[in-house]
Image (cartoon, rainbow, N blue to C red; front, top):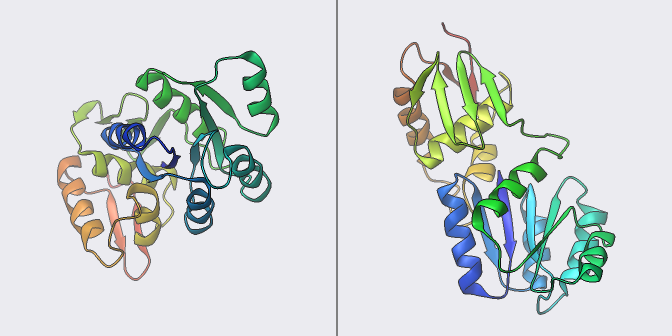
Length: 221
């Protein structure tokens, strides 16, 4: 999953981004509405965490534009207001969910995962393929019932490959969903992460390299 955090309280935004990375969720951070709209045009986000009172383009207007021009992207609106009318207005703008500050981080993560499941390419809570069972909520992976310990990036890569259900996923697509905007697109990090992931999953290897195209999962058992 890839998330955009649009939050002008940068200490809060940084804390959210750091927490999401611990959950194997790639996250970018911007501090105003104009930057949010630019990032949304460039990157394919699953969810936007949108502070309503953004400087520049107001959060309400950002929400309207996302809903109109990026229908597959979900919006989780954040606000310090707790009044019912504020929540109703936020949802009436097209936001998919609404969370008042302060909030508990586990609730934010749960809401993000729930929103991602509403997308046309929804992420089921449990993925099973080629003897692998991946639980996105618990961030757990098992192969034939045996627990497999993965790093955050290895988990994110495996999740994207399993979502493709045997289809080929390009290195560019893996970078888009599993890394943030600061990643060098010419790095060999994908190749290294795939290699490590293969070793952790054990033999026979189920991640196949498709020359010139990317990677896919095959049932090698």
